[in-house]
Every structure is written in structure tokens, then in C-alpha cells.
Length: 120
Image (cartoon, rainbow, N blue to C red):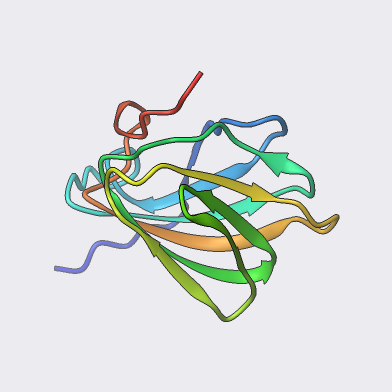
């Protein structure tokens, strides 16, 4: 039988400004440990600490600019584009433009605060 998710769970975010994380599927909202699917809304100028997550993250940008700093440089991802970061890669996400960004992130296995491994 299909499971209807009538509203996402709101998850607290890290970073210098509040970012809205709406989890539709994952450990918090649906109890799924294998995958999480969330819509992110980040304000302009938002930046989070660098991290080395224990999951692959597939991201599709819906609006704005998502910047990903990694050991090999910087990648800017715009609307209609996607990016995948692999488990164990050191990455740092930000939304440097004034309008911020909205994007969908899919994490395999599911995101948990403890599996992000953020730097201090």
C-alpha cells in the first residue's frame, strides 16, 4: 500500500544563517534508513562548516546558486543542474548570491546529524 507523506519534517540546520530542511523521506519523517529526500531552502550568504559525510548525496538545484567547495576546487551548481558528492569526500556547501537557493538532496544511506561529520 502506498504511504502518503502529507507534510515534511523540519530538521535543524548548521551554518551561519538558518536554512530550512524539509525531509519528506528519511530517518526522521518516514523511518527510512536507506535513503533520505529533502528540500532545502538556503538564504543568501549562508555557509556551513566543511564536512566529510558517510553518505552519497545527489543534489538538484531548483533556483539560485549552490556552491560546493571541495579538495579539488569550487563547483557552482545552477538551476536545472545536478551534482553528486561521494561518501568520505570533504565538501562545504554555501549559497553566496543574495537570493539564496532552493534544491533537493537525496542521501544514500539516509542523512543523520551524526553521519555528516562536520568540522569544528
